[in-house]
Image (cartoon, rainbow, N blue to C red; front, side):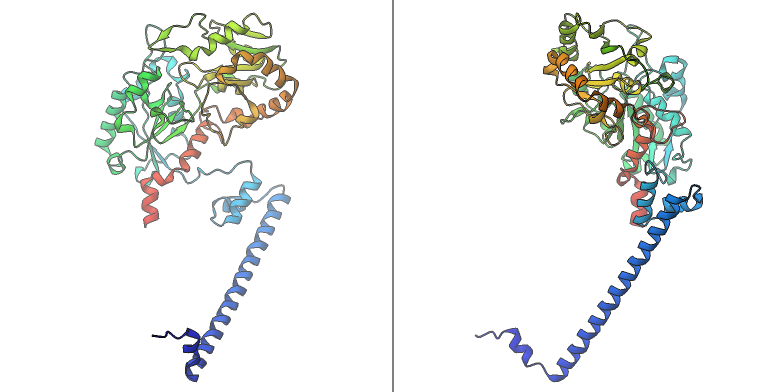
Length: 446
């Protein structure tokens, strides 16, 4: 059987069909020309509006607030671009809605009877709760909420033995809170906790233990595994204690202690500073040594070096020492993170991060590579030479970056919260997770 080419079949098309095809082709060409002309006209109009609006915003010293409000809330891309280029930052939290559960006082308010509850390094759970209560994102109508915040203060049970927070009770206290909200509201059961937010500001996050092996053995409680955890613990490698949707946050440092400090104009007469626990003979605890023995190595190598100001005991005025220092050592403890990271940045001392594989909070807002040094744990014996080389080369550039107020602002929790502060960074991160919001998904489906 011989199959004739299509060109032969076309050649046998009747004159009438050829005439019809010719008309159809001409009609399509005319339609295409009209479409292209309309497209170019539309693009030209948009471009004209863009130029006109840019002129108004950049040349008018007192721009119309209604115009700016319209630009910041309208959907077309050019308006968003104008807003971002005109202001220092783009606020993606304007449309975010968070419902804060009003839990019985045994979950939060009663713990505040101890004054330490709202001011220690785990107190971000208190600070975020307080900031949300007066935030523009708070809604009193749970049906319009994107996320649900569960305010439980699990870090305020201070040990009578050493004064540190004891958190063994945390899983049961949180489970009781979930029982309350799931019994009174439908939202937990509706999403199985997917759009609910908790704070776990402890050594190993929602694993709730200060020792890594015990934390891993505990694991994250099953009822929390669907939710969003705001946690201070973060490493670059896979880890069971961050195997949950999480937002990495800084430890809590009171902004009242920091904002009155002179950051960039102070004379810094201490070259390298560290004050804290440094064991001369580290103890073996469950097969592990505190801080991987890094602090011991620092002490043994540099405690006689006059350029290193090392102290092993607590001192209430140690923040004044940070403000006098050029470099502040931030070695790991039981966990990789340390409050010294925030204190150093807030007081203008270059943080020297010694914690292999650590993840740092809010990298989009804090210029960590430009304001800090990272030294591998195995290289602590070379600290002297490393710091001297930096001091002789690019220290001025690092300090200039460090003294930019936006870095300090992003790491401090204010009440009420401020644009670009630590609470705002949390809200901004939540705004990027609206795919977990039951309400947002329902609106999209509709």
